[in-house]
Length: 433
Image (cartoon, rainbow, N blue to C red; front, side):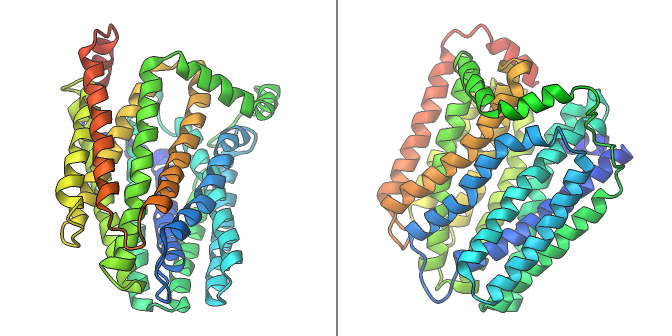
Protein backbone atom coordinates (compact mmCIF):
# COMPACT_ATOMS: atom_id res chain seq x y z
CA UNK A 1 0.00 0.00 0.00
CA UNK A 2 1.17 3.56 -0.69
CA UNK A 3 2.16 6.12 1.96
CA UNK A 4 -1.12 7.99 1.51
CA UNK A 5 -3.09 4.77 1.48
CA UNK A 6 -1.49 3.77 4.78
CA UNK A 7 -2.23 7.20 6.21
CA UNK A 8 -5.90 6.99 5.23
CA UNK A 9 -6.14 3.55 6.80
CA UNK A 10 -4.71 4.47 10.20
CA UNK A 11 -6.59 7.78 10.33
CA UNK A 12 -9.85 5.85 10.53
CA UNK A 13 -9.06 5.16 14.18
CA UNK A 14 -10.26 8.01 16.45
CA UNK A 15 -7.69 7.27 19.16
CA UNK A 16 -4.88 7.33 16.60
CA UNK A 17 -6.19 10.66 15.25
CA UNK A 18 -5.93 12.24 18.70
CA UNK A 19 -2.33 11.11 19.19
CA UNK A 20 -1.47 12.00 15.61
CA UNK A 21 -2.97 15.48 16.06
CA UNK A 22 -0.84 15.98 19.16
CA UNK A 23 2.27 15.08 17.15
CA UNK A 24 1.45 17.35 14.22
CA UNK A 25 0.68 20.42 16.34
CA UNK A 26 3.83 19.94 18.41
CA UNK A 27 6.16 19.28 15.49
CA UNK A 28 4.72 22.21 13.53
CA UNK A 29 5.54 24.36 16.57
CA UNK A 30 9.02 22.78 16.71
CA UNK A 31 9.56 24.10 13.19
CA UNK A 32 8.40 27.59 14.15
CA UNK A 33 10.71 27.56 17.17
CA UNK A 34 13.65 26.38 15.06
CA UNK A 35 13.04 29.24 12.62
CA UNK A 36 13.22 31.70 15.51
CA UNK A 37 16.31 29.94 16.82
CA UNK A 38 18.00 30.19 13.41
CA UNK A 39 17.07 33.86 13.15
CA UNK A 40 18.70 34.68 16.49
CA UNK A 41 21.76 32.41 16.32
CA UNK A 42 22.66 32.19 12.64
CA UNK A 43 21.18 35.18 10.81
CA UNK A 44 22.23 38.12 12.94
CA UNK A 45 22.35 41.12 10.54
CA UNK A 46 25.02 42.78 12.67
CA UNK A 47 27.66 40.16 11.88
CA UNK A 48 28.52 37.48 9.34
CA UNK A 49 28.34 34.07 10.96
CA UNK A 50 31.54 32.00 10.90
CA UNK A 51 31.67 28.25 10.37
CA UNK A 52 33.10 27.83 13.87
CA UNK A 53 30.24 29.73 15.47
CA UNK A 54 27.66 27.67 13.60
CA UNK A 55 29.37 24.39 14.53
CA UNK A 56 29.53 25.45 18.19
CA UNK A 57 25.82 26.28 18.14
CA UNK A 58 24.98 22.88 16.65
CA UNK A 59 27.10 21.17 19.31
CA UNK A 60 25.44 23.06 22.16
CA UNK A 61 21.95 22.33 20.85
CA UNK A 62 22.29 18.73 19.61
CA UNK A 63 24.85 16.89 21.73
CA UNK A 64 22.98 17.28 25.05
CA UNK A 65 19.85 16.20 23.15
CA UNK A 66 21.72 13.02 22.25
CA UNK A 67 22.73 12.45 25.87
CA UNK A 68 19.10 12.70 27.01
CA UNK A 69 17.81 10.36 24.30
CA UNK A 70 18.93 6.97 25.70
CA UNK A 71 17.38 7.70 29.09
CA UNK A 72 14.11 9.15 27.80
CA UNK A 73 12.70 5.87 26.53
CA UNK A 74 13.34 4.12 29.84
CA UNK A 75 12.02 6.92 32.03
CA UNK A 76 8.73 7.22 30.18
CA UNK A 77 8.14 3.56 31.01
CA UNK A 78 7.69 4.75 34.61
CA UNK A 79 5.36 7.71 34.00
CA UNK A 80 1.84 7.90 32.50
CA UNK A 81 2.63 8.73 28.91
CA UNK A 82 -0.31 11.06 28.40
CA UNK A 83 1.12 13.12 31.26
CA UNK A 84 4.55 12.99 29.62
CA UNK A 85 3.01 14.57 26.51
CA UNK A 86 1.01 17.15 28.45
CA UNK A 87 3.75 18.26 30.83
CA UNK A 88 6.45 18.23 28.14
CA UNK A 89 4.31 20.39 25.87
CA UNK A 90 3.53 22.87 28.65
CA UNK A 91 7.21 22.99 29.68
CA UNK A 92 8.19 23.73 26.07
CA UNK A 93 5.53 26.46 25.89
CA UNK A 94 6.89 28.13 29.04
CA UNK A 95 10.51 27.84 27.88
CA UNK A 96 9.67 29.18 24.41
CA UNK A 97 7.97 32.19 26.00
CA UNK A 98 11.07 32.72 28.15
CA UNK A 99 13.20 32.45 24.98
CA UNK A 100 11.12 35.22 23.38
CA UNK A 101 11.71 37.49 26.38
CA UNK A 102 15.44 36.73 26.41
CA UNK A 103 15.76 37.55 22.71
CA UNK A 104 13.96 40.84 23.22
CA UNK A 105 16.39 41.62 26.06
CA UNK A 106 19.47 40.55 24.09
CA UNK A 107 20.40 37.81 26.59
CA UNK A 108 22.45 35.44 24.41
CA UNK A 109 23.88 32.93 26.95
CA UNK A 110 20.60 32.59 28.83
CA UNK A 111 18.80 32.11 25.52
CA UNK A 112 21.04 29.14 24.68
CA UNK A 113 20.19 27.56 28.03
CA UNK A 114 16.46 27.98 27.36
CA UNK A 115 16.83 26.57 23.82
CA UNK A 116 18.82 23.62 25.14
CA UNK A 117 16.06 22.85 27.65
CA UNK A 118 13.36 23.08 24.97
CA UNK A 119 15.16 20.57 22.76
CA UNK A 120 15.95 18.25 25.67
CA UNK A 121 12.34 18.22 26.89
CA UNK A 122 11.27 17.55 23.31
CA UNK A 123 13.10 14.21 23.44
CA UNK A 124 10.71 13.06 26.17
CA UNK A 125 7.75 14.28 24.11
CA UNK A 126 8.82 12.38 20.99
CA UNK A 127 9.61 9.24 22.97
CA UNK A 128 6.18 9.43 24.60
CA UNK A 129 4.53 9.63 21.18
CA UNK A 130 6.40 6.56 19.94
CA UNK A 131 5.80 4.52 23.09
CA UNK A 132 2.09 5.38 23.11
CA UNK A 133 1.46 4.42 19.49
CA UNK A 134 0.81 0.67 20.10
CA UNK A 135 -2.04 1.66 22.48
CA UNK A 136 -4.02 3.55 19.81
CA UNK A 137 -3.73 1.32 16.72
CA UNK A 138 -4.44 -2.41 16.26
CA UNK A 139 -1.38 -4.63 16.16
CA UNK A 140 -1.85 -5.46 12.49
CA UNK A 141 -1.77 -1.74 11.58
CA UNK A 142 1.22 -0.82 13.73
CA UNK A 143 3.69 -1.07 10.84
CA UNK A 144 1.56 1.34 8.81
CA UNK A 145 1.38 3.78 11.69
CA UNK A 146 5.13 3.59 12.27
CA UNK A 147 5.71 4.29 8.59
CA UNK A 148 3.52 7.38 8.27
CA UNK A 149 3.78 9.22 11.61
CA UNK A 150 7.49 10.23 11.65
CA UNK A 151 7.37 11.40 8.04
CA UNK A 152 4.17 13.37 8.62
CA UNK A 153 5.74 14.92 11.73
CA UNK A 154 8.84 15.90 9.73
CA UNK A 155 6.63 17.50 7.07
CA UNK A 156 4.76 19.43 9.78
CA UNK A 157 8.09 20.61 11.20
CA UNK A 158 9.25 21.91 7.83
CA UNK A 159 5.89 23.64 7.32
CA UNK A 160 6.30 25.24 10.74
CA UNK A 161 9.80 26.42 9.82
CA UNK A 162 8.40 28.07 6.72
CA UNK A 163 5.66 29.71 8.76
CA UNK A 164 8.23 30.94 11.28
CA UNK A 165 10.34 32.39 8.48
CA UNK A 166 7.28 34.20 7.10
CA UNK A 167 6.53 35.65 10.54
CA UNK A 168 10.17 36.76 10.73
CA UNK A 169 9.85 38.53 7.38
CA UNK A 170 6.84 40.44 8.67
CA UNK A 171 8.50 41.23 12.00
CA UNK A 172 11.80 42.43 10.56
CA UNK A 173 15.44 41.94 11.48
CA UNK A 174 15.29 43.24 15.02
CA UNK A 175 14.94 41.24 18.22
CA UNK A 176 11.21 41.89 18.45
CA UNK A 177 10.66 40.12 15.13
CA UNK A 178 12.50 37.01 16.33
CA UNK A 179 10.71 37.25 19.68
CA UNK A 180 7.37 37.19 17.85
CA UNK A 181 8.36 33.96 16.07
CA UNK A 182 9.27 32.32 19.39
CA UNK A 183 6.06 33.50 21.02
CA UNK A 184 4.00 31.90 18.25
CA UNK A 185 5.94 28.68 18.87
CA UNK A 186 5.07 28.93 22.57
CA UNK A 187 1.37 29.20 21.72
CA UNK A 188 1.70 26.17 19.44
CA UNK A 189 3.33 24.08 22.17
CA UNK A 190 0.52 25.01 24.54
CA UNK A 191 -1.94 23.96 21.84
CA UNK A 192 -0.25 20.56 21.57
CA UNK A 193 -0.70 20.13 25.32
CA UNK A 194 -4.40 20.88 24.99
CA UNK A 195 -4.78 18.36 22.15
CA UNK A 196 -3.09 15.71 24.33
CA UNK A 197 -5.90 16.15 26.87
CA UNK A 198 -8.27 14.47 24.40
CA UNK A 199 -6.48 11.24 25.40
CA UNK A 200 -7.24 9.47 28.66
CA UNK A 201 -4.83 9.67 31.61
CA UNK A 202 -3.80 6.00 31.27
CA UNK A 203 -4.76 5.56 27.62
CA UNK A 204 -1.14 5.43 26.44
CA UNK A 205 0.15 3.25 29.29
CA UNK A 206 2.35 2.12 30.85
CA UNK A 207 0.83 -0.51 33.12
CA UNK A 208 3.26 -0.08 35.99
CA UNK A 209 1.68 -2.76 38.10
CA UNK A 210 2.90 -5.40 35.65
CA UNK A 211 6.68 -5.02 35.83
CA UNK A 212 7.86 -2.22 38.13
CA UNK A 213 11.08 -3.94 39.15
CA UNK A 214 12.07 -4.61 35.55
CA UNK A 215 11.57 -0.94 34.71
CA UNK A 216 13.62 0.22 37.71
CA UNK A 217 16.40 -2.13 36.67
CA UNK A 218 16.27 -0.75 33.14
CA UNK A 219 16.84 2.79 34.42
CA UNK A 220 19.97 1.63 36.21
CA UNK A 221 21.22 -0.29 33.19
CA UNK A 222 20.85 2.25 30.35
CA UNK A 223 24.57 2.58 29.66
CA UNK A 224 25.17 -1.14 30.05
CA UNK A 225 22.29 -1.78 27.69
CA UNK A 226 23.74 0.52 25.04
CA UNK A 227 27.06 -1.32 25.22
CA UNK A 228 25.28 -4.63 24.72
CA UNK A 229 23.36 -3.04 21.84
CA UNK A 230 26.65 -2.10 20.14
CA UNK A 231 27.98 -5.64 20.63
CA UNK A 232 24.81 -7.10 19.14
CA UNK A 233 25.08 -4.74 16.18
CA UNK A 234 28.67 -5.75 15.58
CA UNK A 235 27.59 -9.38 15.25
CA UNK A 236 24.95 -8.49 12.63
CA UNK A 237 26.74 -7.28 9.46
CA UNK A 238 23.56 -6.11 7.72
CA UNK A 239 22.52 -3.84 10.59
CA UNK A 240 26.11 -2.80 11.33
CA UNK A 241 26.77 -1.73 7.74
CA UNK A 242 23.43 0.09 7.59
CA UNK A 243 24.24 2.13 10.71
CA UNK A 244 27.75 2.85 9.45
CA UNK A 245 26.15 4.21 6.28
CA UNK A 246 23.72 6.45 8.16
CA UNK A 247 26.63 7.72 10.26
CA UNK A 248 28.67 8.58 7.18
CA UNK A 249 25.68 10.15 5.50
CA UNK A 250 24.86 12.29 8.55
CA UNK A 251 28.44 13.61 8.64
CA UNK A 252 28.04 14.70 5.02
CA UNK A 253 24.55 16.06 5.69
CA UNK A 254 25.94 18.11 8.59
CA UNK A 255 28.58 19.59 6.28
CA UNK A 256 26.01 20.37 3.58
CA UNK A 257 23.65 22.02 6.10
CA UNK A 258 26.42 24.26 7.41
CA UNK A 259 27.61 25.12 3.88
CA UNK A 260 24.03 26.03 2.90
CA UNK A 261 23.58 28.19 5.98
CA UNK A 262 26.85 30.07 5.37
CA UNK A 263 26.08 30.61 1.69
CA UNK A 264 22.69 32.14 2.43
CA UNK A 265 24.01 34.21 5.33
CA UNK A 266 27.27 35.47 3.87
CA UNK A 267 27.30 34.99 0.08
CA UNK A 268 23.85 34.77 -1.51
CA UNK A 269 22.47 37.55 0.73
CA UNK A 270 23.68 40.07 3.30
CA UNK A 271 22.22 37.98 6.13
CA UNK A 272 19.36 39.03 8.38
CA UNK A 273 15.80 38.30 7.30
CA UNK A 274 16.83 37.90 3.64
CA UNK A 275 19.33 35.21 4.59
CA UNK A 276 16.83 33.45 6.85
CA UNK A 277 14.20 33.55 4.11
CA UNK A 278 16.56 32.08 1.51
CA UNK A 279 17.78 29.39 3.88
CA UNK A 280 14.17 28.59 4.84
CA UNK A 281 13.24 28.13 1.17
CA UNK A 282 16.16 25.73 0.73
CA UNK A 283 15.19 23.83 3.87
CA UNK A 284 11.55 23.81 2.77
CA UNK A 285 12.58 22.17 -0.49
CA UNK A 286 14.73 19.76 1.47
CA UNK A 287 11.62 18.92 3.51
CA UNK A 288 9.68 18.28 0.31
CA UNK A 289 12.51 15.95 -0.70
CA UNK A 290 12.21 14.20 2.68
CA UNK A 291 8.53 13.55 2.08
CA UNK A 292 9.02 12.32 -1.48
CA UNK A 293 11.88 10.08 -0.36
CA UNK A 294 9.65 8.50 2.27
CA UNK A 295 6.91 7.94 -0.31
CA UNK A 296 9.24 6.56 -3.01
CA UNK A 297 11.29 4.20 -0.85
CA UNK A 298 8.62 1.53 -0.16
CA UNK A 299 7.82 1.51 -3.89
CA UNK A 300 11.51 1.21 -4.81
CA UNK A 301 12.39 -1.49 -2.28
CA UNK A 302 9.46 -3.56 -3.51
CA UNK A 303 11.27 -3.72 -6.85
CA UNK A 304 14.93 -3.96 -5.85
CA UNK A 305 17.05 -5.03 -2.90
CA UNK A 306 17.36 -2.40 -0.15
CA UNK A 307 21.15 -2.30 -0.64
CA UNK A 308 20.69 -1.52 -4.34
CA UNK A 309 18.33 1.35 -3.50
CA UNK A 310 20.85 2.76 -1.01
CA UNK A 311 23.63 2.52 -3.60
CA UNK A 312 21.57 4.32 -6.25
CA UNK A 313 20.63 7.13 -3.88
CA UNK A 314 24.20 7.70 -2.68
CA UNK A 315 25.45 7.78 -6.27
CA UNK A 316 22.69 10.26 -7.14
CA UNK A 317 23.74 12.47 -4.21
CA UNK A 318 27.29 12.57 -5.59
CA UNK A 319 26.02 13.63 -9.02
CA UNK A 320 23.72 16.27 -7.51
CA UNK A 321 26.57 17.87 -5.56
CA UNK A 322 28.72 18.10 -8.69
CA UNK A 323 25.99 19.43 -11.00
CA UNK A 324 23.95 21.65 -8.67
CA UNK A 325 26.29 22.28 -5.74
CA UNK A 326 29.66 23.17 -7.23
CA UNK A 327 28.46 26.22 -9.19
CA UNK A 328 27.47 27.79 -5.83
CA UNK A 329 24.54 29.46 -7.54
CA UNK A 330 21.49 30.72 -5.61
CA UNK A 331 19.35 29.46 -8.51
CA UNK A 332 20.78 25.92 -8.45
CA UNK A 333 21.44 25.34 -4.76
CA UNK A 334 17.75 24.80 -3.84
CA UNK A 335 17.71 21.89 -6.32
CA UNK A 336 20.63 20.36 -4.43
CA UNK A 337 18.76 20.89 -1.14
CA UNK A 338 15.67 19.11 -2.48
CA UNK A 339 17.70 16.20 -3.86
CA UNK A 340 19.78 15.72 -0.72
CA UNK A 341 16.58 15.81 1.34
CA UNK A 342 15.19 13.00 -0.83
CA UNK A 343 18.37 10.96 -0.40
CA UNK A 344 18.50 11.63 3.33
CA UNK A 345 15.03 10.27 4.03
CA UNK A 346 15.25 7.50 1.44
CA UNK A 347 18.47 6.19 2.99
CA UNK A 348 17.12 6.56 6.53
CA UNK A 349 13.88 4.68 5.84
CA UNK A 350 15.85 1.87 4.18
CA UNK A 351 18.38 1.74 7.02
CA UNK A 352 15.56 1.68 9.58
CA UNK A 353 14.10 -1.35 7.81
CA UNK A 354 17.42 -3.18 7.64
CA UNK A 355 18.14 -2.56 11.32
CA UNK A 356 14.64 -3.64 12.37
CA UNK A 357 14.86 -6.83 10.33
CA UNK A 358 18.36 -7.89 11.32
CA UNK A 359 18.48 -7.33 15.08
CA UNK A 360 16.79 -9.51 17.66
CA UNK A 361 13.64 -8.12 19.23
CA UNK A 362 15.22 -8.30 22.68
CA UNK A 363 17.93 -5.86 21.55
CA UNK A 364 15.85 -3.57 19.33
CA UNK A 365 15.29 -0.82 21.89
CA UNK A 366 18.96 -0.72 22.87
CA UNK A 367 20.07 -0.70 19.24
CA UNK A 368 17.79 2.21 18.41
CA UNK A 369 19.12 4.12 21.42
CA UNK A 370 22.57 3.75 19.86
CA UNK A 371 21.07 4.78 16.51
CA UNK A 372 19.56 7.91 18.07
CA UNK A 373 22.88 9.03 19.55
CA UNK A 374 24.76 8.23 16.33
CA UNK A 375 22.22 10.17 14.24
CA UNK A 376 22.79 13.46 16.10
CA UNK A 377 26.45 13.06 17.06
CA UNK A 378 27.60 12.42 13.49
CA UNK A 379 25.66 15.47 12.27
CA UNK A 380 27.55 17.59 14.83
CA UNK A 381 30.81 15.94 13.76
CA UNK A 382 30.09 17.03 10.19
CA UNK A 383 29.47 20.59 11.38
CA UNK A 384 32.73 20.49 13.37
CA UNK A 385 34.67 19.33 10.32
CA UNK A 386 33.12 22.20 8.37
CA UNK A 387 34.37 24.67 10.98
CA UNK A 388 37.92 23.63 10.15
CA UNK A 389 37.49 23.29 6.38
CA UNK A 390 34.83 25.70 5.12
CA UNK A 391 35.51 29.44 4.66
CA UNK A 392 33.03 32.02 6.03
CA UNK A 393 31.56 32.44 2.53
CA UNK A 394 30.50 28.78 2.50
CA UNK A 395 31.89 28.35 -1.03
CA UNK A 396 34.57 25.64 -1.05
CA UNK A 397 35.09 23.59 -4.20
CA UNK A 398 37.46 21.09 -2.49
CA UNK A 399 34.99 20.40 0.34
CA UNK A 400 31.99 19.84 -1.95
CA UNK A 401 34.10 17.71 -4.30
CA UNK A 402 35.26 15.59 -1.34
CA UNK A 403 31.64 15.18 -0.22
CA UNK A 404 30.66 13.97 -3.70
CA UNK A 405 33.56 11.50 -3.66
CA UNK A 406 32.52 10.21 -0.22
CA UNK A 407 28.91 9.67 -1.37
CA UNK A 408 30.19 7.85 -4.45
CA UNK A 409 32.49 5.64 -2.37
CA UNK A 410 29.68 4.64 0.01
CA UNK A 411 27.41 3.91 -2.94
CA UNK A 412 30.10 1.77 -4.57
CA UNK A 413 30.56 -0.16 -1.32
CA UNK A 414 26.85 -1.02 -1.25
CA UNK A 415 26.90 -1.99 -4.93
CA UNK A 416 29.87 -4.28 -4.29
CA UNK A 417 28.15 -5.72 -1.24
CA UNK A 418 25.10 -6.53 -3.32
CA UNK A 419 27.20 -8.47 -5.84
CA UNK A 420 28.53 -10.75 -3.13
CA UNK A 421 26.57 -13.87 -2.32
CA UNK A 422 24.16 -13.02 0.51
CA UNK A 423 21.82 -15.78 1.72
CA UNK A 424 19.61 -13.17 3.38
CA UNK A 425 19.20 -10.94 0.32
CA UNK A 426 16.10 -12.65 -0.99
CA UNK A 427 14.40 -12.65 2.43
CA UNK A 428 15.16 -8.96 2.96
CA UNK A 429 13.83 -8.07 -0.45
CA UNK A 430 10.61 -10.05 0.09
CA UNK A 431 10.19 -8.48 3.50
CA UNK A 432 10.51 -4.98 2.07
CA UNK A 433 7.88 -5.70 -0.59
